[in-house]
Length: 105
Image (tube, rainbow, N blue to C red):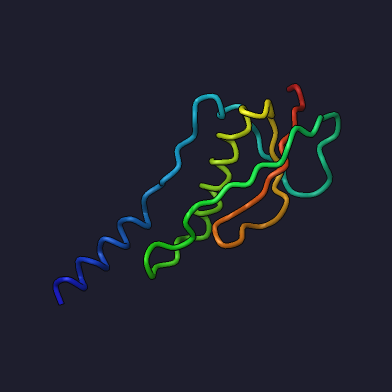
């Protein structure tokens, strides 16, 4: 019984942790809503990011997963010389694609 309680408590604590932190160079990258491509911008590439959607038998919080996916994409954007991201769809199984643009803001 004690082992089950420890396992359950550990799972809950781990699910509250943020695994992904925003890199300093990614702080200026903005994320625009899905839809039409932003005007006056050059498309640089597409970025696919993935985080665990579940830990052991516990499904992670959907909002936390979305936030971490966006943070990972923002961290990748400077590497392709992009300053703007746009989701290309909803997250699925802890994975999401983003279009990366250089808008020259």
